[in-house]
View 1 (cartoon, protein in one colour):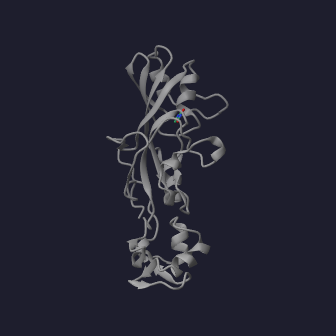
View 2: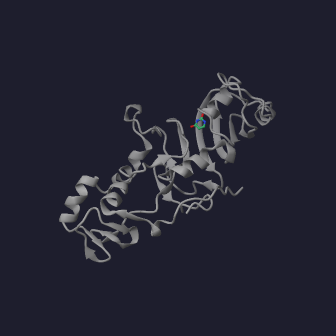
View 3: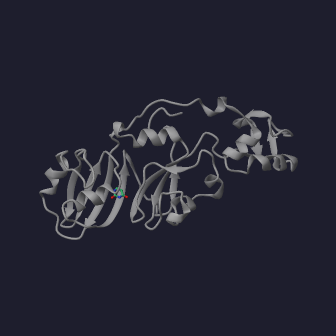
Amino acid sequence: MTVRIGAVPSPIHTVSRRLDQWLANLGYCSRREARDWIDAGRLTVGGKPADDPGAKAQAVAVRVDGEPLDHPEGLLLLLHKPLGLVCSHDEREGANVYGLLPERWRQRNPVVTSVGRLDKDTSGLLLLTDQTALVHRLTSPKHKVPKRYVATVDRELSEGLIPLFASGALVLEGEKDPCLPAELRMLNSTTAELVLTEGRYHQVRRMFASQGYDVRTLHRSHFGDLDLGELAPGRWRELPLDAFGNLG
Ligand code: URA
């Protein structure tokens, strides 16, 4: 299934911003520090040394230490999330996936964030982006992007789970709306593939728990049409910003 979602922003090559804003938004330094970077001769605009942090320029004209700006148009990354990391930015929740990224990317504004979340104990395909509108589109229940998981449970799976999960009638503990129909396929007696088109809190674990199963391992193999390919845990690859349609 090809997921094509919405239209959006103005192409980055037409956008002019203050130099201190480019530097701060792209994670190089704070706006205050931009003055020092300019005084140190690190920036050029159109090949000429910059002298005013407030001067406006298009990204394509700016060089820092002789290099083009780092992804001025935005970032969309497909990460193989390893076990043991959280998707929250709150450091009190423990080591997070953003620690896998280069420091400059971690300083960007808008911040690089995950598209939905995977639990600390879940591995697999996680999208990361600084495109806030894209996060909203891809996580909106309206778009029903299919997410494919492989779950291993603590005891033999019953065939009866297939029609139950597909029924659209399964109500999770503490909720009133039933889960949307989900496709379950047995891989062996304790392992199954589950395709969800929504993303409720701990949904896979709670769906199995509702029938008395404990999920022992959980891995997301696909998000829409995307898979991990040969990507090792902890590694990412860049995706074009329009990987999900005309998003500029
Ligand atoms: N469902 C879960 O229970 N956990 C995840 O990480 C993702 C989906």
